[in-house]
Image (cartoon, rainbow, N blue to C red; front, side, top):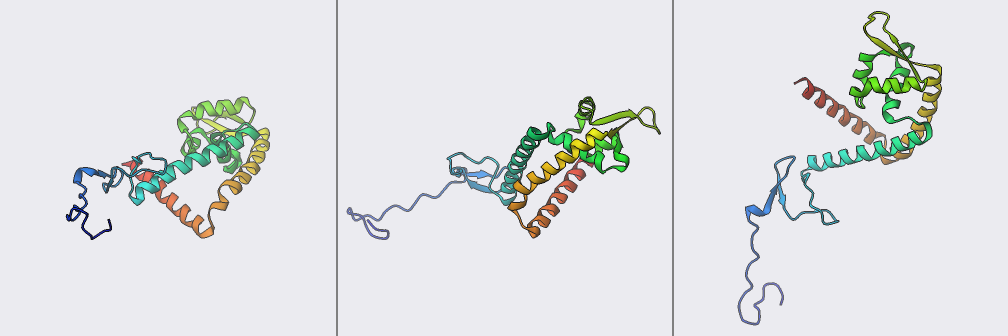
Amino acid sequence: MTAGHSDTTGRHPEPAAQASPEDARVDIAEGTTESAAMSDQRGRHDLTGFSPKARAWRSFFETSAIISDRMEKRLHSSTGLRLSDYNLMLLLAEAEDHQLRMGELAEGMVFSPSRLSYQVKSLQKRGLIDRFADAEDRRGMTAQLTEEGHRVFEQASRLHGTHIRQLFHPALDDAEADTLREICEQIKDTVAAADRA
């Protein structure tokens, strides 16, 4: 039977049933609605949502986790450093005299600043940093890269740069890189504003 023709009984086919409001789902992230039956190619329901911002968040969250995991595995297998160790040593390498007060280090850390004391002690045991009383405030402590720390960091920096060029650079051109950087800065500003609120 073709569309628009009567069936063999002479009756016209019933019109397709309309979806009821109960069949729609609320987009968790943005309040928009989509069919409850929508799912990914593997048949799983996507509970994050289907609005552009919800889908962007899912991609950002998963991609950040994936690339961080791969970068850390490569770095650790070659140098024994975690990304959080590299972040700490990078801050010291960029600082004047390659040293920072512990409070300044905590402010600059993007990986678990609450574990900073443990992390500093661990790197100190490996001979990569020194820790000593602050000259201006004896109650405070200062961390500084050692010569061995410089050597290890320079090796790690070269490897890390190679990993960035392998895993990140091929994915976007310069214009896209500028756009991504601007978006990341906007996200950082939004998070900082929320922390201050």
